[in-house]
Image (cartoon, rainbow, N blue to C red; front, side, top):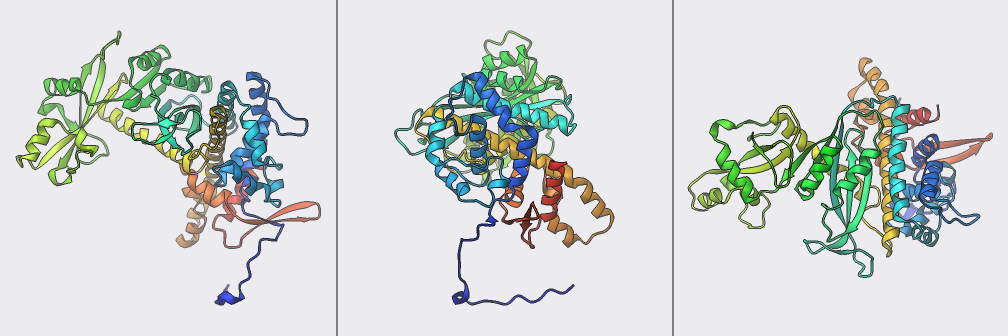
Length: 488
């Protein structure tokens, strides 16, 4: 079928208006709305918040569940401030597609957020973890498989001097420190804390881990925790041992580590690392101060670095991974390469190279944090009150986990269809236009871009609602099949 050649128009003929009440720019909220209704997200959050403490509500106002979901819908379409609620309030055509049609005014939402206590905000996050377990059961996802937990923090920078708890970190940036525990295999957030920007992540790590473990399904498999050196304390290791959690912790490059490295390893100790060029691993036994159990494994990775690749800037991060003796030889031109070292402390059994590669995948949590900040509203904490900002953080967790579950739904609903099309030898170019194989649970940005933030016309006819997608929408078939799965 031939298509007519489009005509080029001159700018003087284009008239722009925004007065069509049947158009919505966020038709994909229909999908998250169905997911919210199927999992009973609003009702479950409301019940959990009221268990923590009765949430004061006006007779005709929103309850806690509706507020959290409405904020989540706002940040899913790009909002990062309360004023962006007006974006959905003005979207009359999309109101009936959303889980919460009556989006609150920014001032109303701000007043409601101030009422949330610490326990209520934590209850929202824990509820989303439980709803994720409910989602897994509906999809018959394996629950007895091993669970990998990742813990990390990020600074949400702010500029208001009057914001409660906002303070300067060691880099001189003012903000709040958000700390998360994620379930790597499910790509969901299980627990969250909001701290001062200048606060240490270490004191609350054991409590955060405990809340994350409580959020897991009862019949889950072996637990493992991966953290960086910022969380390394013997107290956290002891908490892992008490709760039967295997751990792998990055260790700072202290003089004690360098001394043991030279004393216990030789040339024959090293063997190639897995999936990393010019890298080798070795190990030795070590008991940190205060550890009262068996000696732990220190797994060392070294990466060969050519002299020309070493920055001359003394602030370079790579320079801190190279021993001083090697740096002195490099400065005198005595060597053509040096080694950059990293240390891991673990009680896991198995091959050291396998454990080192597994720990390297801790970078997945950085993708989760990036999605929460750049895609689900955490880049800005808009309120002056710390309690309100903690509730806002809880709403971003609601949004993030909903998008993660929607990504699983999309992948599950299109995998069989894709295989059929490949078997039928469909042209490669046609396959690329649908691209459902790219919708993997970790690729949340694609879900937001191609399935949530999409325009459509909402038409009522014969007591039915029709959502008219654009003719050139690449993932229109994916959109339709996902909606059918959510409603069947």
